[in-house]
Image 1 (cartoon, one colour):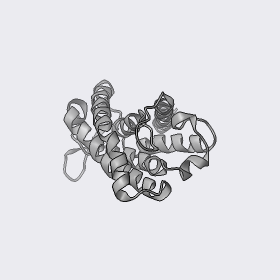
Image 2 (cartoon, helix red, strand yellow):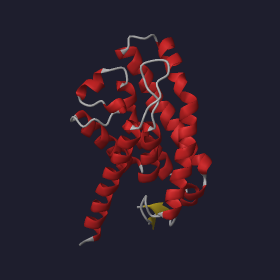
Image 3 (cartoon, one colour):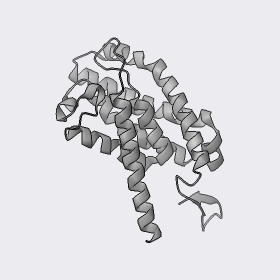
Length: 202
């Protein structure tokens, strides 16, 4: 078996595995506070996918989760499934998930290898920025669109999640750095740039 085939097989297994992890985190009992959006562990798994797998594979893992859920498997929060979920008030958050994984992965991929393995604050910051720009921004837009809220009301609803997301991002950073220490080539082996002689990621 060629190296390319082994690499493709590994990529597919990782994408499927993290897609399953997101599904598990989504169907675990959620916390329902004010507003129509429940608090789940989804964002932890979504951002972990990006931080561990990188931008492309992280995006595909989350996309796989969304496609399988839309196809009818009850893996969305509360056991929901089907395309109807994408017409509800959580649509913005769902759309933001793969984009957040991709952005988090892109930021992590550009970090020095040692920082990826040891710097919890840097990984935490990558997750926090990705969550704020993609999940929360699009989530509020979805509330305005589908729940007929004003932007002020959507902001008030969204801020309920902030403390929880900070804690989930911290947990994600701890797990991601541990995974990269255990599997240092998970984002690809470093190669040498022919132009600069500097190590770069394959």
